[in-house]
Length: 326
Image (cartoon, rainbow, N blue to C red; front, side, top):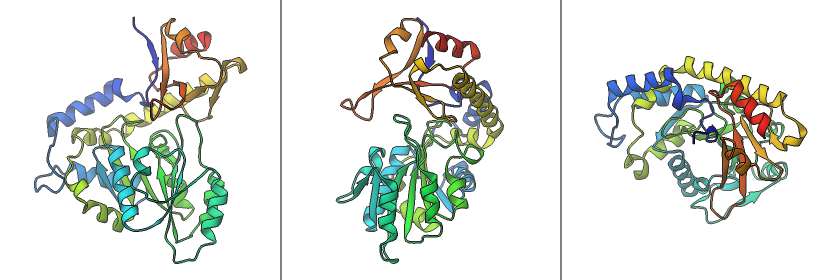
């Protein structure tokens, strides 16, 4: 049986987009299907350096590095923070990659209270606050008004995991970077590229001194990067991203405008994920040819979450069928 899929994280619908696939094929013709060497190799395709400069400009950072996954980007950053003895504050919903390697840290639910305590510390203390910009399972987001109070506070670096924001939300759909740059925050951004952009790999962006330090680690130098053709498609595909983003926004607006209270869905006005807060709907929908996300994350012991994920390729007919049957 074929299903209409409302699952996954490919919010821009790029895996099935003909224009994007054409760029992928052109990248393969130019670079082949893989580069299995180290980034320290003397024959690294220049497209990696070009992509890192591209990310740096989009995320308003001095420098970036590419990794084989968002998870590796998190592990590399966590190792750097531990090695340099920062005071670490992490939110409860961080990806496991960012929670590893810490002997002591403070978890928090009340961002305002924790940040008030940090501001009371001596100026020469070095603090790092690690946050999810948006949690796609709970739809919890950062209170940006609280962050704005940290303008030009130099003893605190904010680390934003923007995996589910980049490509979908924010200034020119590049996530939180524009907001925090305008407000004078010191920040590091990391992201999986496998969500909205549908690319293999991860990116870590921040001050050049931090990025250069991490590039000296054997875990980065000894790891192969993602295939180079992805980054040819990334750099060449801005018009594709923009067209898909317009379609996605139209789909989100149409779906929200036609929801009814009895649908029991939690959502954000500008985000393509809708969480079921009522009785289970997965089985009834699957029997009618519609598949939504229904799984436990990040471990099999976590609560089951049912989510409807809209992407740019859904037609109004697809959305009407879901609205009728949900």
